Length: 225
Image (cartoon, rainbow, N blue to C red; front, side, top):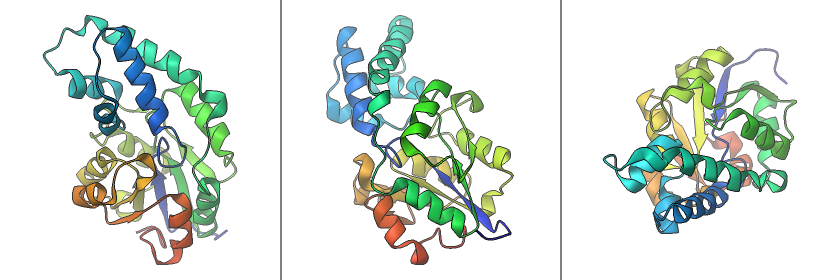
């Protein structure tokens, strides 16, 4: 590993490094069904990447009766928690993190998952030896597409926005990075298309961590920024 940190890479985790996007979709679908507020899975999928507060506004409308919101969030958390021990990293996700670290880049997981869930994601990745900083939902006042979690990741890792790249899988990731003028590399492994990610402003788009790793030397991650 290089002696000096030349920059860093902020990584979203859900749908970017760990294969969870559709698990969240199914869990929200069932939670909504249980409260008699059914929403098609395709619609839910497009909202994954937002925090639960904004996701429910997006799916059910900001003027809805919010009395069921806590029950919805609890149901989603319980349903999704059943998958924790079976979470699977996306292809070569840990290898990508290690390759970035070997290039002298500080590796940061910029996730807004709750603390217990962060532990499950880290166990699935099995790359703690090269991860410098990990955020959680407690670090952000507002969820994506607000940039709060990225600001927290920068502050905790000691990195400057001018020296980092963000890697994410949703248009909400791209939007959050754009508010801080951070280039966002998109991955389609969360189920969002190449066209949607590029249209939202992603500076480059790859299929998954393995594809980004294969092209790493020529990617926006090559030297941080």
